[in-house]
Amino acid sequence: MFLFKASRYLEELEKFRPDILLSCKESLQNKSQDDDFIRVDDKIFEKCPSESIDYAVMEKTEDAVVVPLDVGWNDIGAWTALWDVETKDEQKNVVSGDAMLENTTNSFIHGGDRLIAAVGLDNVVIVDTKDALLVAKKEDVQDVKKIVEKLKLADRSECKLHREVYRPWGKYDSIDKGDRYQVKRITVNPGEKLSIQMHHHRAEHWIVVSGTASVTNGDTTFLVTENESTYIPIGVIHALENPGKVPLEMIEVQSGSYLGEDDIVRFEDRYGRA
Image 1: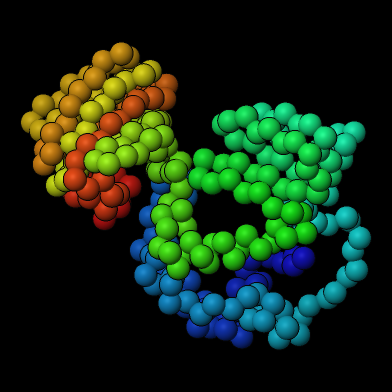
Image 2 (image 1 turned 120 degrees about the horizontal axis):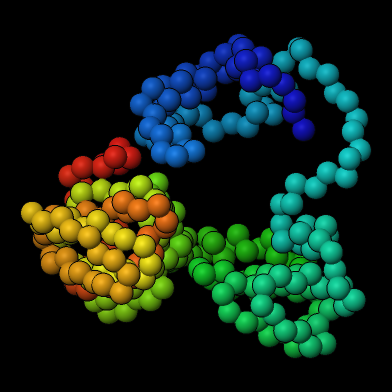
């Protein structure tokens, strides 16, 4: 564990790896901010040399002191580490979420939105998320990185996109998808607004579940409230805003020949996105 003042570390970084420091400074010159996030210039930051603090500074500095410390540190670097530190039931299981177990022992089970039923298992890890389901022996769980490599080689979407995606204005959850359609549950935080945009390949139906939406559809701006809906045709410039004091929850049904996230032409965006 490294402890130091940020200013002191930057002095040492400038001494031993001025190229890294310069890359970081340059990437901050064109930074943007939304809520609690500071977003650096990614194209510049990608050029920063990839070297850990250990090699770049700590092995070279002449101003460090090493102190032994025993505080039961665990960096929780794997699911098995969570099993080690969490409270266990009588069968030595760590369970969270909706799960029912029968004759299952020494296991870590993390549920998501659906029921997990485990029967006759020992020493396993089960992690259910909106993106994927992981089932592994505890001693082999680190090999999930091999699955990730296979996903990349197969160019699978699971290694690129999450089902639930956070944006500066809120989040969306892709709850269903098929041939020429996609359904999303969208949450827009109070006072936030999506970019003014249009799509070349898809139309959108918006149904408000709760809250109030200010909708720009072509040359018209109007309010859509709970249990009301509106339709955005292909090629029409549109925008969505939450003018209220509570989160806006809505269902978006997309239909068209191409439904990728890159089919967005932004004309104006308060968060500085291209």
